[in-house]
Length: 408
Image (cartoon, rainbow, N blue to C red; front, side, top):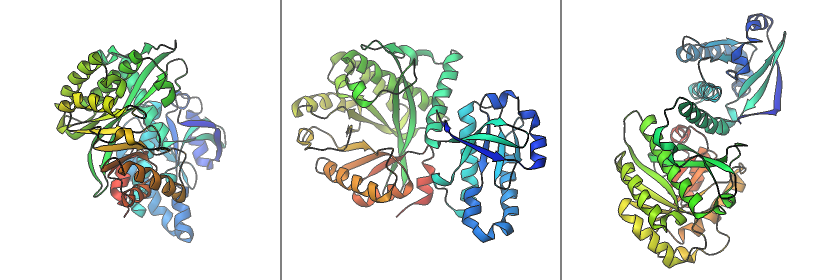
């Protein structure tokens, strides 16, 4: 979920605002999580002593931005010196949060030319009282993921998912029912911050708890389970590519596939069909990202990659974690790049530099190119580029931030 009750915050209202918000206190929009607060605190703090003279122009730009975007059913009101309430009753909960994050990002970009994620503060309103309200902080990353799942569930509820449900959900060998959720994550070439296409990023979730399975839990599933997850991932990724790109073909698509599926004759045949379908949806071809490769014998890995190579233009080896030991089994295995994901909890520059320096150096001993997924900021993307990484994706839903900032 994108909001956490532990982050609940009480916000005081202007007297006029409190009167205007009485009608929302018991509204379905409040109960459905469709009312949020945009915080201007970061702008006020950055302007410092200039805030008193500049705030009228800030309010004016915020108002014009919201008038242009909230639509006929939307409503907005400044409720304190640095809080703007936005109600979007025609949107789903997390979609409303994403829109509010986007509005605030636009305001920050207008005034400062940058919009660090730490300054994009949106809160979900949970309670409105006579003189104030309670709200919980929205996590931009979790909101983006939840919005995609929310959209998928809505499509499925309307019966529009069609054949993409062929492999998911299913009851796994451990007795738990699981489903696959996917998003398209923009991938950037770090030399000039140009977008090369998308990566299919997936999560495997238990349907009873909606908690994602860890890498280790997925690896402990049966061969048949892993094949279903891979096939569902590609099918759902292609569905998103068709429905979210407005008919425009991306340059390429990075498709994750487990070594287990590649080493299966039956799994490989179905994968080949899906890869051919993917090639028709992109301009230059697809990239196969082979997962779960740690410890796989070199000969077995080379055999599997050789059989899928005719269906893709490049092969990437995906590491589950930064290598603690040698990667000799990956030498000569037909991999043209290695990829890994940046740890989510790592935010400081020094910590990131230590991690990235070791991980990139180890990967470059095996492959010429290194891809790092879900970097926490454009600054970290710049650091990764200086250390030798060739491509990256951003942890934020908006990779545009990295393109706009162009950290050197």
